[in-house]
Structures are given as C-alpha cells and as structure tokens.
Length: 92
Image 1: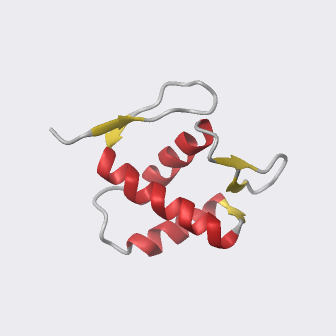
Image 2: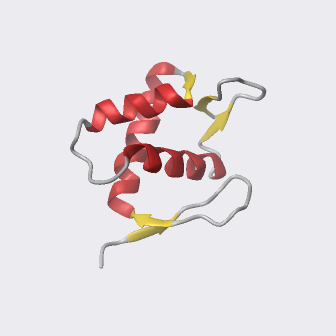
C-alpha cells in the first residue's frame, strides 16, 4: 500500500487521505508557482499546475490542486486574499 497523507482543511472540516507522492508533486508546483507569481487567482493557479505536470500525473489535477491548496492554507503556508473575487491566493 502506498504511503498516504491525511490532509487538513482550513475550516476544520474532515480532510482526505491521498497519496503522499501525489501530494508532494502538487505541493511543490503550487509553492514554486506562487513564489514566481506572488499572487494569482485560484483558477490560474490550477491551470499553471496543470501545465507544469503536463499529462504526467495520474488523476484529476484540479481535484488535487483544490485538496492540496486547502491543506496548505490549513498549515499556514498559503492564504486567500480577503474579499477577493475571484479568489486570489498567495504565500504567507
């Protein structure tokens, strides 16, 4: 059985168990993208991650981006820009 990680949720909701390998791939791309862009919409972040993994990822990239983004928010590594529409995210 592959190693898994239990994700966190910023609103203290139940997280999910996902592959640690997939988590790390998406986490690294999210963080490196935000280091370059400083602040971006969630949709553009998701598109950037999709382009970076470029078909070399087994599973729904958008689902993993959403799940890992929420986990990174809960861990205090990234945050949503308050009152932004559409939602903006940035590094803490």
